[in-house]
Length: 142
Image (cartoon, rainbow, N blue to C red):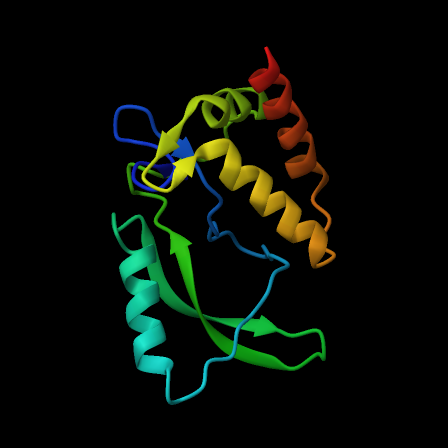
């Protein structure tokens, strides 16, 4: 999705990852269990951070944990009718956007590199994301 606040601006949007609602799709990731004592505060924080432009829809999705247990989790899924929804952008165009965009929380390339590093640290492989990192690094060196 286009980032017009955190990693880009309305005039020069960046790109960030988003859950895209598609039949039979899945995403490897991390689920956090929040204690009842901090649930209200945590949800308020997430809503303030994730719903800033209304590009995401908050909903509850079944999540299967490594143990095989399925739990309901609050997820933020991109609204495909929102102006920030990008659909499919080729990797070359993604790299160009990410290499040159910056927003309130810093450069877009930093978001990409941090995301790829964290996925690697938790053992989630994403070859396409790794290829995008290399493309952005090349553009930043040019």
